[in-house]
Image (cartoon, rainbow, N blue to C red; front, side):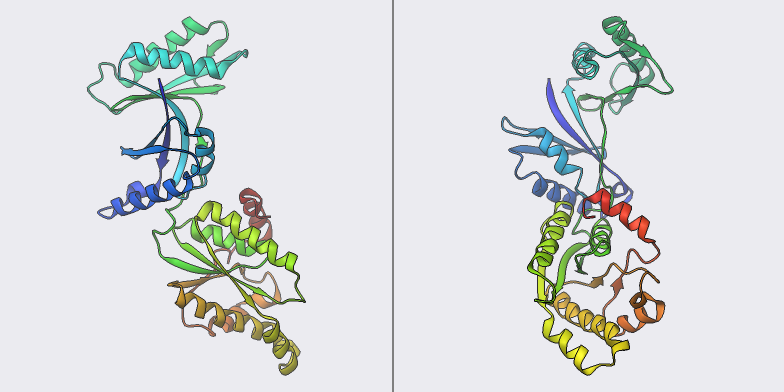
Length: 335
């Protein structure tokens, strides 16, 4: 019996003639994510990626890495056997035995028959394997089709895959399949979430951070670097540009009316970000702004800020309140 990782895709399956491009990009991102997990092979069939490891492959580490790859809906570790009922039963014995341990649990069986030449239909597979489990594991197991403690999944394809656990991924589109954007990354809560949400739609990120030393500390810069590393765990490689901003900030404070200083500073940041964006092949700027959250994020202020640049500005948090943003930040470990 061989262990295989099943990785499921979502909306990529709805693509048309260009679907192969998205699948290839996702496979490339998966390889990059698992580069430190050992040797492996990726195959593709019927909306599934199948990852088979070699002798030194760390399967648990690979599962953790894959669940952070945008474009993957969920991941399961399955036992893979030939399409033979006796071999399938051996796999079931192994998987269910490992799941039960010393506990008593309820279960049900769900089967999918992708290989239509297999001699049993899906309901018949469920019935036969359910009876087999009851016979071999009673009294530790009982059937509960409505609210079982675990579900035994059996997929009969070119081979048969048996598993019980499904680990949810982050869904979305493969990073790099929808161009490149320049994220204005602060040390706060909002901008990392904005970067995560845009990257989830397939956008590769370049990050810009403005550092006003000595008014902001080296520790604050380190925090931003740490945030970029966390984002990179979802987005792959990220370029981070740290821009010295002290002189510009002092000139604004010296020469501009105080009531306009914040909006002028924001316009300066947008202009500099646009220069970096054009030099790095970005097609849009990305910010963590939300309408009305602070004085510099009113409709009038955002309109004035946007007029400082000539490329689109994406604001994925624009209609969200702080609690919603914090919930996502906690989920992705940037809070």
